Amino acid sequence: MSALTKEMLAFEPAITFEDVSVGFDDGQVLRGVTFQVQERGTLILLGETGTGKTLTLKMAAGLLTPNSGSVIVLGNEVSEMKERELLAFRRKIGFVFQEGALFDSMPVAENVAYRLREDGVADEEIESRVREVLQFVELEHTLEQLPSDRLPGR
Image 1 (cartoon, rainbow, N blue to C red):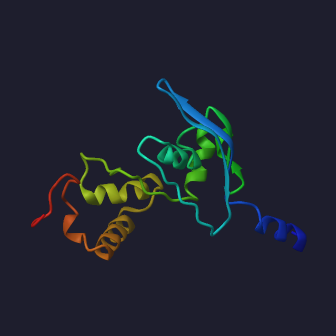
Image 2 (cartoon, one colour):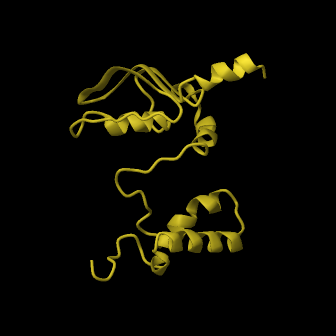
C-alpha cells in the first residue's frame, strides 16, 4: 500500500450516515440524518425518549436497516450487508445495550460464556475466562445466580 493510500485511509470516517431515514407504522422517527465520526472521534446523541438515538446506534451495528440512505461503518456499508456478512462485521465492533441484554433463564456464568461457546472455545478455557472477567468486575459470587436474582443488601 502506498504512503498516499495510507494517508487517505487515515482520514476515512469511522462512521458515516448519509441521508438516513427510518420509520414505523407510527410514522417517521429519523429523516435525512447525515453525519460523520472520525476514528477516535466523539459524537454525542442527545434527545428526548423516542427521538431515535438508540435506533441510530442499532443501524450503525447493522441491527436495523434504514428505510433510505446509507450507513457506512469502518468502510462497510452495513445498510446493504447480508446477515452472514453482518455476523462477521459485528465481531469487529462492540456495543452495550441500554437495557439489560441477558438471557433471564440462564445463570450469570452462562450469559458471560455465551459468545465464547458460539465461537467454539474449549470448555476449560471458557470457565477460566468467565471467572476472570467476573472477578475483575467483583461479581464472581454471582456465577450461579440468575440475572433477576437480587444481590444481598440491595
